[in-house]
Length: 94
Image 1: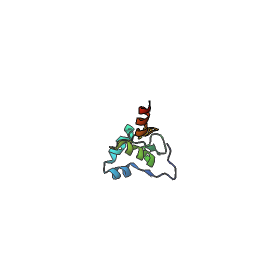
Image 2: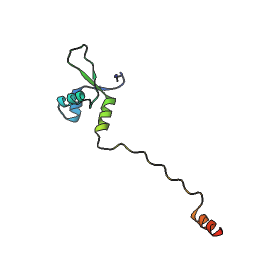
Image 3: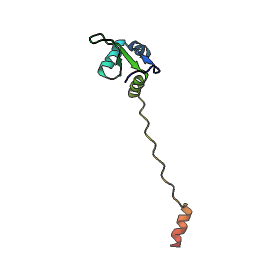
Image 4: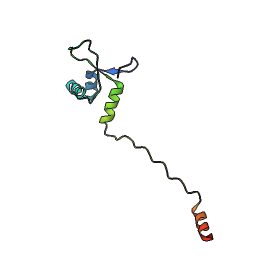
């Protein structure tokens, strides 16, 4: 996943402020894989500089949400082709 210029990105500090948690907790979530992030540091061996995309943040929020994903509603049963009165009348005719 690569950030695009149109998509907003966040730093771990932004996420920490948003949820009122410590930055270390955000970094821990990134290390554990709970929160997807992109390392934009320039070289190997350098300290990672994480960037979180809006899409990754939305996925994280959906996973952590206490609301279950809505299940599709079942299709209504087909209605009988004849009315009950017509069914009774046909029964008496037989």
